[in-house]
Image (cartoon, rainbow, N blue to C red):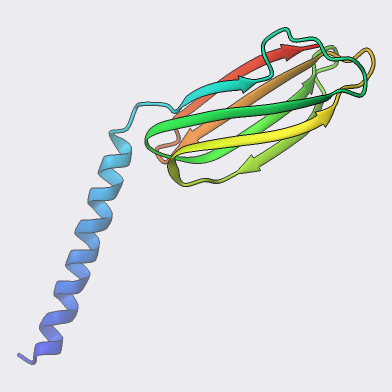
Length: 127
């Protein structure tokens, strides 16, 4: 049998085994990412026009594949800001800033997903 007729099936078999082993690792991952909100502090007060800086650090046992910052008007539930990032690393930092408006209280929610689609959320309330 010619060498190239043997090499092609062997390469296909190696690719199949590699793909299956990566999938198995992801399927066995039940550990969600860990989120630490650095700022703002929960129940922190901001005057109108002050800048609210949001910073969160996220870690995972494999890799963080998706991060979101949702800024929500607490009274109405309306999503005011939706920031996305896709780090693809075991740890990541997500940041955003916006100006506080008069009379609005905000829920700032951080959402993180890993490669196995485990999801974590953390939130703080600011006024």
